Image (cartoon, rainbow, N blue to C red; front, top):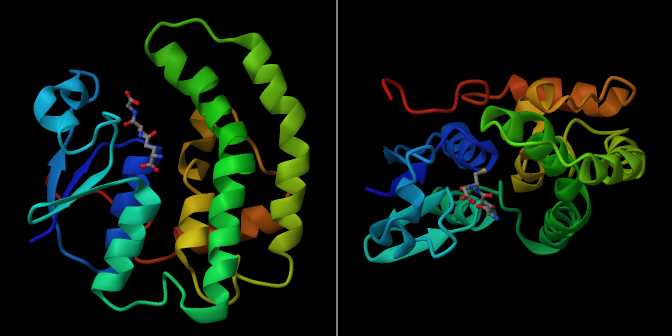
Amino acid sequence: MMKLYYAETPHGRKACAVAAYLGIELDFERVDLAGGAHNQPAYLAINPMGQVPTLVVGSDYLSESNAIAIRLANEVRSDFWPKGRVQAHAQRWLSWDSEHFKPVVATYFVENALKPLFGEKTDMSALAQAEAAFPKVARILDDALKDRDFILGSRPTIADFALATFLPFAAASRLTFETYPEIMRWNAGLNSLPGYLDPYPKGA
Ligand SMILES: N[C@@H](CCC(=O)N[C@@H](CS)C(=O)NCC(=O)O)C(=O)O
């Protein structure tokens, strides 16, 4: 069986949510980030960045949550990773997320949620930069969601799960989308998908 190394972090959660939504059974192994398990040689051998998630299939090690989502979608032949013409649009949003959206929302998470948790000082200038960049990217996403339930149409795809990576952590990140009604509606739709709200392995 495929094995997912995960933690209750944005990208770890995303991989768990994809598996739960697609109904794929996995072996799960929680990586103790606080204890530094991700920097041990055994883990670095399967994920050289020392990050979660990692999917292990036999002797094949796959890092990067979006790549893991594609692998899982292909496993069940799901158009969660779309084919043909739509695939380019999915990739467009994955790229836009990595290049433009995620760096902004991740900064809120790191500066407002993560650093205080570890007793580190918030970098006010990094936060101010993210706050300045936020309206443009939030507006682009809100506009793109206007006539649809999910970013590529009526069904959720990898692009939705990627764009929403940091949304379950919004409150802790002091990030609000209240003035972006389409994002709020879209997020509510994601929350109602099977497994989405509680994606972690049971009994973990
Ligand atoms: N691009 C990677 C990012 C993974 C990532 O940032 N993982 C974080 C948790 S959400 C992590 O493991 N951080 C620990 C560290 O970097 O030391 C992906 O999509 O999987």
